[in-house]
Length: 313
Image (cartoon, rainbow, N blue to C red; front, side, top):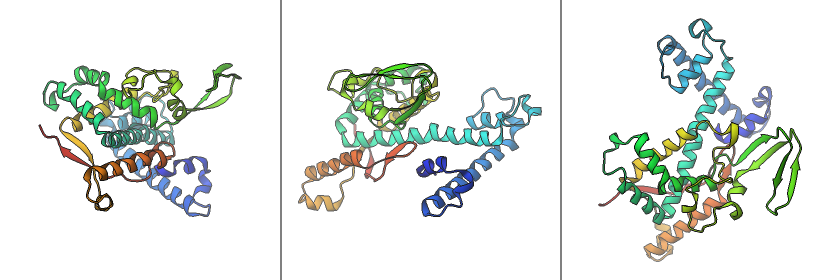
């Protein structure tokens, strides 16, 4: 479904299951299966709605179901069922698919560049002071981790591999923009714009001016729009950053990520393990340029085998 979102969004619903061709058939099947799954999720929550309707702290699913519930229970005007299902879908897409995609890029890059992985681990060795994971807190540990090298790595990856590579915005008044050649252009009011985050992030003119990356991404810059900006910035930014920081800290504190060199590459390098590793790493880096697929989000089209190994003291 996620790989066919553009086709699902652009094709009239009445035609999606009737048009000839494998691509439309697969898109229709994916849409039908996901819709059924969300309906089952919603139905399961509705069965217990009286139990959680009065809860102060609700899950995201419970909160969405409440919005579409019987007004006799909630005392509020309900939203249509279709809107409820749409909210469930976008919550899962924005809260999990994009985070998962970003974490995949982070782990692949830390594997390909072990010197940066080591610096993240050095930060984790100093903080959180050897306390067990059960004692880590958002208030104390998350803030410090985000300010350090771990947070800098996150920002660097979101610069280059932002799951929201493009942003669509409409101008509410005339706006003057400056292009890469320093030429000014005026966009009239009510102009629909497509902002290319990916291109802006790759433009050295908007970096902070140092070559020691990711150290130069510890602070936000106008080009860093990983979560959007202004009144329509992502509401899930804080949740996503806490989620990614938690996963990185929990994994890299006790484990390392390593490339898996296959036997064929080792033979081609006549048993030279260092050369075989470098060749495998170069192939992985090339994939990060040539094999990125952009749909609603972005992802690697090919696999780069890595392994998780326990760190030695």
